[in-house]
Amino acid sequence: MSFPAPPCAECAEPLQYDVEIRRFVCGNLQCSALGMEVPIWRALQQSGLAVSDPPGLPRPVHKGLPVPWVAPRTADYVFWLALDAARCALAHNRWLCQVCGDELPGEAWVLATPEGQVLQAALHAKCKDLALEFCPHLSSGDTRAVPMLVSRDELLADGHPLRDAAPSDPFFLQQWQVAR
Image 1 (cartoon, rainbow, N blue to C red):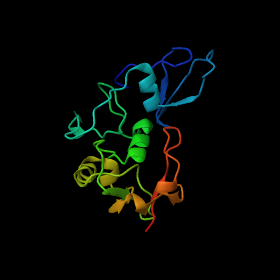
Image 2 (tube, rainbow, N blue to C red):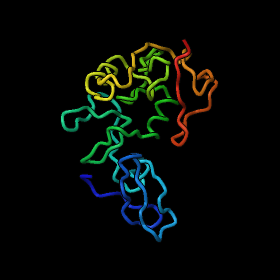
Image 3 (cartoon, rainbow, N blue to C red):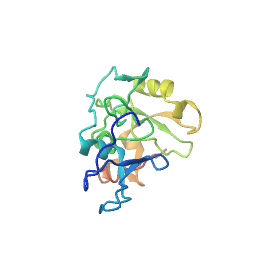
Image 4 (tube, rainbow, N blue to C red):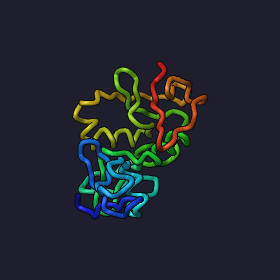
């Protein structure tokens, strides 16, 4: 890691980053939180290391790449493969773009798998293009995600129409699916 590890909220010892699970864990044998996973976004928030970029375009750039609004980061490091679940929950509940954080129009774009599973949240057309251009996960074809223009009425959350679903929570994000 190219930044100081955030401290454990229980014992204040530096947390260890587990690459396989992409989470921090406490390794202090004397700590009651020993081995407990802490999501990246939560560890960064608790330690004060999180950088909270404002919504809007253009996005901040790190090593030539635009930083999505839902990507957790510090002043010097972006956790590209992680997700700030608190911001993702806001995007879900307030119909905000996952890339820029601004409010979406009535219809917005989602990136969905062939089975209709939505990757994270919705996007503006320009932000969808930005994500597809710069995100190696999306451009590699591994996700097989295809852009789809949808309204909130065309989305399901955990099998229920989005308008009837419980709000997303940072610790229990809804899984969206296209209802078509």
